[in-house]
Amino acid sequence: MRGPTGNQASPLSITEYRGAETATRFTDPQQEYSALLNGCGVYDLGFRARLSLTGGDRVRWMNGMVTNNIRDLAAGHGVYAFLLNPQGRILGDMVVYSQGEALIVETDRGQVEKIVATFDHYIIMDDVNVENLGENWTALGLSGPNSRALLNAAGIKTPEMQPLEMMTPQCVCDCDCVECKVVRGEDLQHESYEVWLAPKDVYKTWQALVAAGAAPVGSEALELQRIVAGIPLYGVDIRERDLPQETEQMRALNFNKGCYVGQEIIERIRSRGNVHRKFTGFLVKGAAAITAGEKVISAEKEAGEITSVATLSTSAGERTFALGYIRRETGIPGREAIIGAVKATVAQLPFTSVALGQAEDAVLHKV
Image 1: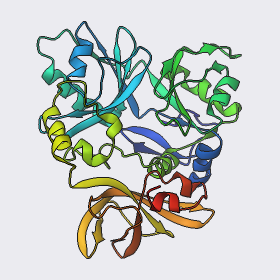
Image 2: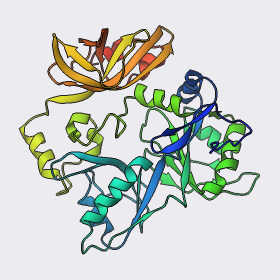
Image 3: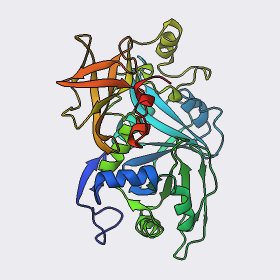
Image 4: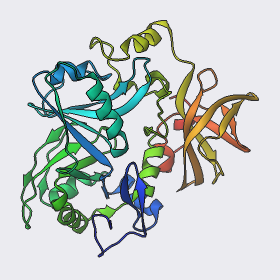
């Protein structure tokens, strides 16, 4: 597999990323990351998969399976949610969209098998049908402040949209029209879009977006973007042993929706007090030799662990950004910690202000 650009602009390498073969880089990853932050980068989302849920019981049943509110989800909109086991541990994460007569579950390809098996286990007498749409749909992503302008320039007419809103755009391109859907990313502050389309249309759509000015981006730059944005990845930063409140992803939880698998544990945590550890960021000046799995030491005691690491050149010099967990009583932004032999500072997420060359105080202290 050569990626969406074929041989004309082939990447330096192909690697497995989040369950699919993906281009590692096209140029320098930090230049590609800069495009994602300041202009527009286009990237392959072949590592994302979609499941369709149909049947008369789909909404009621799905609302009883995941942590967010599916019952009141408006058509053309989505929510981020966790799938839990009865002990409240996280089996997977996903975005669930309403399409009127169907629910669409979007997740990483590496999670599909476990999620489908869990769904099958709980579908008993319910009128719910689960279909893997992997052969019918794939996606391209765009990120950066110029993303919507480039979509429109490429002939995919996209209006202003709300986070996790889905629409079918008007196609006015010069080539054969592409049947697709456009989804706005979840982060309101940093614009991004997904273009869902048939695999046969990926190459020509990629070419049109690059011709409009989008910079090709590989998985290394996507990882830089993810870590600097403080977004945990299931299987890396979120594991089955973790509880939802430990991950700090409160956008995935709805406390007014009624019962769902694992809800008793989540409600007990909410009513009795916080969990003992939390997901957070760690900032190091310079390029530090930190690896995932290293322990975090605070006040000469083991207080946490690192799950993801990235190094980025900023206007203030190189900085190492790490994600991981720390005990709540020591996880105060601005407090020093030791990771291996390196001094780090607990940081508020996201790290974006540092990546943009702004003052580091914004992430080192609560503001």
